[in-house]
Image (cartoon, rainbow, N blue to C red):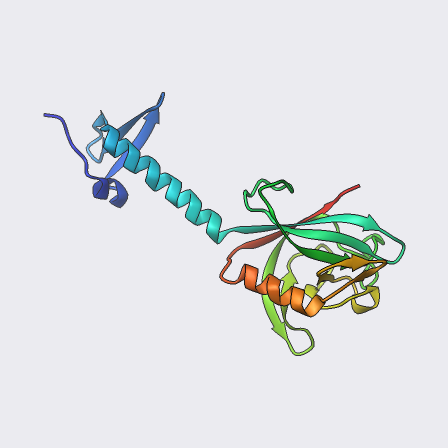
Length: 197
């Protein structure tokens, strides 16, 4: 007699699914492997896709693409990496401009941070109110994403703004508010900083 497994049993782990050459088999706790029906296969695939989509919603990646380098500043663009492929493309959402100090060998208070991938965490302080903390930057402490318009407003942190000019970004306060609204409820935010040379 052929064993039949319900989707609830699969979801509870009473049975396990195994894919071989495009056919999905259900493996019972007794060790019996049987091909599943087309309906069951559809349910298993939908369940896997939903888990992947849910994990993507919980993990968010931003890409800061640096584009303009001057002796006084580094101007870039910040994107939401919608397809989580680690590069800026048509599927991504432009968020805002950024301004950092120029690269000066990662020296504290006078340099931008190295290109790389960093955890980003929402934070609040008396000085900067609500902003973001860029975590685990090598040899640096408290690199933040906060309000500011020009190099004099940062000691190595990342400033955000709506438009950019000569060593300048505009409407920083409104831009940070919009960024916080965009990222509200997002967990496990990563910031990928890329030098576009």
